[in-house]
Image: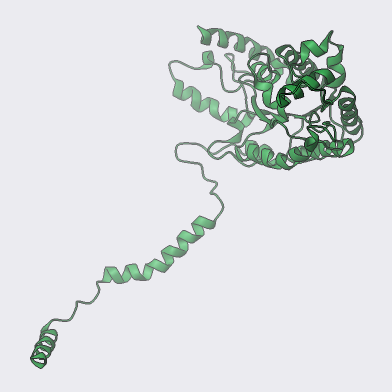
Length: 365
């Protein structure tokens, strides 16, 4: 029985016709597969093409050259000269809290330079200069990756560096000489990234008694405790910042808030809410000191001289908006970030000021 079945199976297999030969198209595909794989690999590993994306013209060579000179890459999907410049605020909780809408100095800065500079807050509560130095490279790289050009940078550490050893906040303590060296290293790193306007801010004055009350409240006790920070210790760090950065080839402007804020009558009760952080009045005092320093040190940051971002609404040709934009875009790319085309077609300071007043009044209506 088994022999008969095997014989039948063999006979059936012998009678089945052989499979057809592969078609020419299939053979051609098989031959092309290695070449297609090699081409895909080369495209994946090659640098980004310089050709513009569909529907958008290539950025002007002058724009790319200026951004390249700053060490900043092109924006991912936009010519960098159409990206608004930024004011980069780098520091501890005194910077992190600066965008408080009730008097925050960072919020005031953003309001002042609305449509001119974007304020980027990189404040990290509790940080000292030692930890901040580790973060700065990443902060600068992130700004560069987005095509942002830093027009102004503030560096504000020291309030935590000055925490006293042997007290409740001793893990934040950094010796004054290391603190000064860290600030200098931050300034050097920012300059290597192309940041030209850098303002270092000293730690503010401290209310010793308020710090004691603050610690007691946090610990839930009423027994006496030594202050974690003192006015005298913060002065040492303010002096270290001024001494390290106010003179020499690597000097940068230093805003000595430790001295400036103590001029305010009853500054302890008026400016500080826990002996260290600011009340709304304190934040406004910081902003007043900062604004005065910016105007004195960098006149080009005065409002009439900082160009607005994109044309004002009344500059647009209502009858031919496409033609207006086609003519305006190359000028914006050539002029650089924030270039203004006012209603008169120019970029004079007077035209900017007038256009800003008219444009905002019309927009609010």
